[in-house]
Image (spheres, one colour):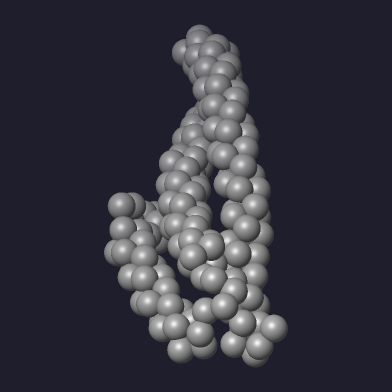
Length: 182
């Protein structure tokens, strides 16, 4: 086999291998992301129900304490401490429920990651098509031209994906109060 034929064979093998192995790994990534999203959704739902039940129980307790206070059988210092505790409890529960809203942020990030995976799948598919179309006896100049065209096509696909996903979730911390969603 001549050097030119060997080059075509090696390039074909490389492109097909990158496409096949990349697609297999990408499928695993997508499966993991889907499972993560499912588990996250279930966990947030259960946490939300638990926090709301806790809040309901605390409200009942606070109502009972209010009745004791209204009956006048407790000192003013104790009343002030109880009111402060009630305010702290309400603040903590509200803060916990607000933190549960991170599900929306993480769901958006997972969705964007899935879109990026789809974009990468298109790139890998394009490489596979080029590898399949490449004959083992293709001349070096033809291989160079085909690789250049493929590079330009991949750059366009990458730019299109970047434009599609231009906006990002800028939230760095749940308590920072700076949410810029799509």
